[in-house]
Length: 488
Image 1 (spheres, rainbow, N blue to C red):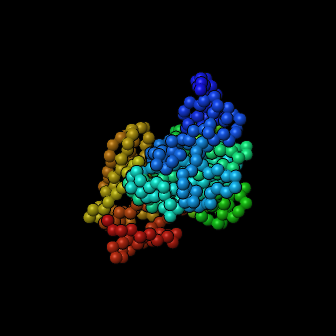
Image 2 (cartoon, rainbow, N blue to C red):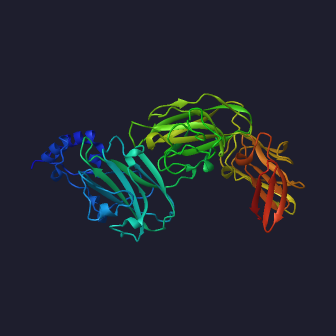
Image 3 (cartoon, rainbow, N blue to C red):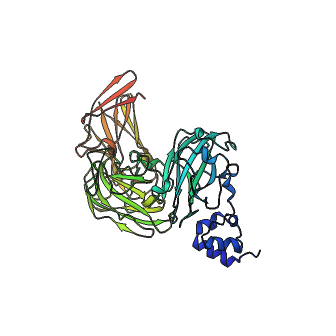
């Protein structure tokens, strides 16, 4: 039978691009007519290679999502009865499935994402994960071998993201995508894009990435992220029932939209000032141009968030938004959440802009490697400058972490620095000026890193006393917080 020309294949790509990408065979004229007429002429459709578990498509952790479909597929004997979380089949229903396999390597926790852009399903589609298996084995798995199962994903947003935890290293796991085809206007249609990712550090509020630059475009992504609180829809981001956004209907909710795959950032001001944030360069979205991102600015702490402003939801690909100016007090921290509208996955950029007060923000301690030690009651302080500039700063010390005295002034030339200081009792040290560090406290032979982004208040949180007990230092702060650290 005559094959269609390349020009006609382009027409197919435009009308159903995921189908064409994932089933890259030549359609005959009869197959093309069958699809155009939306008929159930099964003989005119060829199954994808991964229709059977033994031919599962291999996924690589961290790779871009792989397009797939169950549109043309069947099920093997035992697939429907073994499906772990939902009875499959029934009157007028034709089950269809596709299989995938990945090896976890050295990972024990991973994020899995599935997006179904621009298509629907009129019955339901489901996902199950099975394992662990010796590499290359596992087919056909039983329900008892499932470690995760979610049914009727079509009830959620088009992008669905979740964590797999306590995985067995160097083992294989199988993914089964199951669709129930029951005829009607969307019969057969479940096309998707599937990926497996390492869990990013800033996928949770407690591990937000620090912003330590002003006026610099910083690139980010929410590709490979999952909901901070488990399943999508958990909007109590700070786990605090007493905080509630103005547009939220339920006590404790911090945003008025569904959270699907959030990434987090923060900065802490060291002086009073006015700021705004640009949100732009939204691109490479898994769902094309139909969705995009959503972003919210908060002030407070990880356990007490107060909404400052929402970006448009959705912020469509190619759009640009600048927040209104907001004031930040010395010692106060600002948090940003970037999330996928309808579970979309996109790249993006943001810029922190100082309007008044100067770009005085807490720097990442890892960037400066600001640290200290006490040797025979002599304090040694060390830090590093990784890039030369004309910025100036001071090494300062204090006995109460409120009133500071300059020890020495510096220009930010690249290199490693150290300073020796003789001081009795507990002494606090910091870098302050165009470059700002965290605060460290040194006393006798102990070395304590002080974390202002977690405990700092405008009036300063002081270490009131330090005791030793069974190999630990017990640090007592003026706000009532107690901390235990192992002796160095």
